[in-house]
Amino acid sequence: MSALLSLRGVRKAYGTNEVVCGVDLELNAGECFGLLGPNGAGKTTTLRLALGLTDPDTGDIRLLGHAVPRNAREARLRVGVVPQSDNLDPDFTVFENLLVYGRYFGLRDRDIAARVPPLLEFAGLQARAGARIQTLSGGMKRRLSLARALINDPDLIFLDEPTTGLDPQARHVIWERLKRLVAQGKTILLTTHFMDEAERLCRRLAVMDRGRIIAEGSPQQLIGRHIEPQVVEIYGEGASPWASEHGQAACDRCEQVGETVFCYTRDGDRVLALLDGREELHYLHRRANLEDVFLKLTGRDLRD
Amino acid sequence: MRVQLLALPRVSPRFVQIWRRNFLVWRKLAVSSMLGNLADPMFYMLGLGFGLGSLLPEVNGIPYITFLAAGTVCYSTMNSATFEALYSAFSRLHVQKTWDAILNTPMNLDDIVLAEALWAASKSVLSGVAILAIIWVLGLSRSPLTLWIIPLTVLIGLAFGSLGLVMTALAPSYDFFMYYFTLVITPMVLLCGVFFPVAQLPSVLQSVSAVLPLTHAIEVVRPLVTGRAPQWPWLHVAVLAAYAVVAFYLALILTRRRLLT
Image (cartoon, rainbow over all chains, first blue to last red; front, side, top):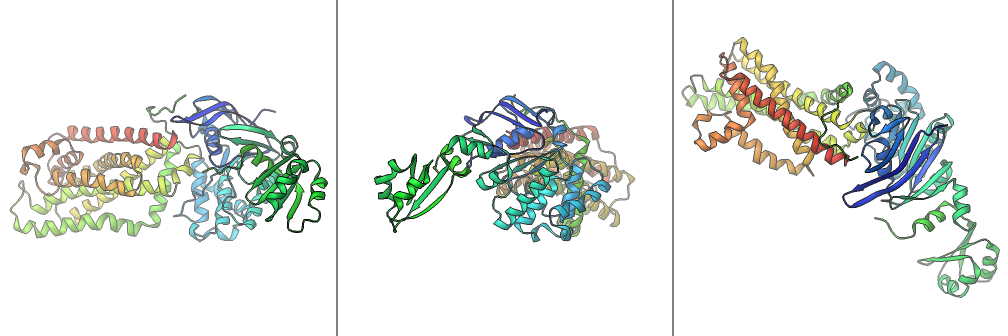
């Protein structure tokens, strides 16, 4: 099976600042692929490169069988994009937004009008066709952006941080819709810095940092490969002295962030035994997750 | 593979859909938009034309209001395209990110810039023709030659629309456009013969006037209003076309630099 999207050795610098430093990426039909990374890791630039919106300095990009950027226009006919921040047309109603966007793909008004009702139903906006954009909530706008990205019935959908800024209810609705799209056979490439989102939706992930892909695999593979299987988070006033006393011996790896001590271990019971009787310490014993992997790989420093 | 900033435009016929998008927005706001575009030049023309005109003898052999009306057609045409290409296009580029949304479809930036230039010219035609209609209704001119003014407003609109898009490509915010108005548009209005013949100006200012596009617009439109054939029609048309083509290409390069690199 040939890849729907492939990037090989792609580099892109703005001035002297190289933001994408040799990225290789391959997306197969029918999968939901997640590109993870802290702010400024180069995720959005990678998407722009893949869409042919900016030219790489070096490297090869193929999107849906077309060489990009040279034939990006043809490739984008079969692609849908949900941008990071909504850019719906504020002067138009919900229906008009879809109509005008469909025209950009060369669709006839009649065909667009036939596609709109099922799309609005998919987006949970069937009662809002005539509503102005300003009257929609953040979650509704996101869902309309998703519906708009589907107006050309794309094979591949790009989503740049699809749930950033949404409340938990709205995020769950978006997740459920994306799962439906994958079930329908659509291929999805999404960027996110929410690990629960990536873990729920993506069969395959790449972690990106400082313009490079530093890890790739399924969520389980990444957890198995990069981190101890269990974590005990210990917090409270005595956490720090406890860590100095027992940290080394109790677990494989011990990290302290503020008042919280993270014990990464293959044997959680040993840590728990050492916490026995220490009423002043609060703790949480859990399985390692993607966020632990992410923080280990990209560090705990703030990225602004 | 560097971004080919200097590449010739590559346009798809689908660019018409971007023009249609702007038209659809305009249709919703047509009444207020037309008032803004037309009321201002119309009151200038009627107020100054009748008020100041009553104090003046004929100017260049025609009543002052007729003289001013011919200038106002060009002035109004220029203004419409300028406002559209500056403020409205900048909203779509920078504030609403409409251009970003369009770039995710099979359109490219060349399609957008072309559609915006043509849209600005379309607004110009509307404004120019509205003033022309007032000229006809008031009986200031009954010459069939005035019909030539309609295609000319397209050209004048393209020239000023493209010039405006150059500014928009460079603008960090709306405030930036004040420079363009103070340094380009206002001098143009006062030096190019809208309100009085250019020949009244000192020779230095006449030389400046000679290279400004509005002068060439007025030089070809005013004789048509008075029912005479312009003296050098193709020269003026060529200058306006050169402004349109060069400014459009420059706007394209600067917009590519802004959005694609």
